[in-house]
Image 1 (cartoon, rainbow, N blue to C red):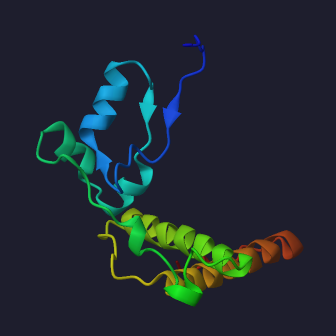
Image 2: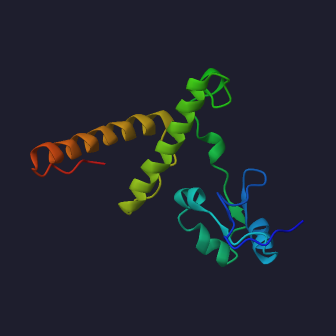
Image 3: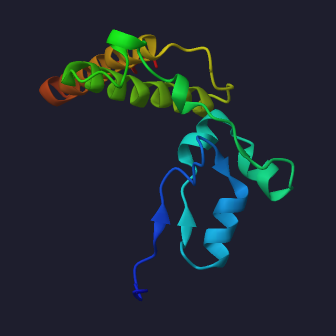
Length: 149
């Protein structure tokens, strides 16, 4: 039974069938008014020109990329039943996207060869430096040197 919602309905991460953001699935859902918005943040981090290509008909969808974002396979993989490895892979994937967004903010292309564990360690080091700089400002009132991303 359809329900009339006053709140817009958004589909996060686009429509992935199978592991691909498909233009046809997105447009069909929007035209049927099944959705109000389709989120494309992660695909746009990897392919910043994707929305333009989709609108011009130059692409049918986003390339699959999430399947290769993991700390490792087998024992280290995201499908491991041990909670630590699941968290490690989740945080690593988040850090990988953060590092790509930082690159894009500097007008640099995404680094698709960046390893997930490297991204996690680098991002955590940056977060530590930022936290230390903020603490210095709060404790001393002096401006801290800008952290290097």
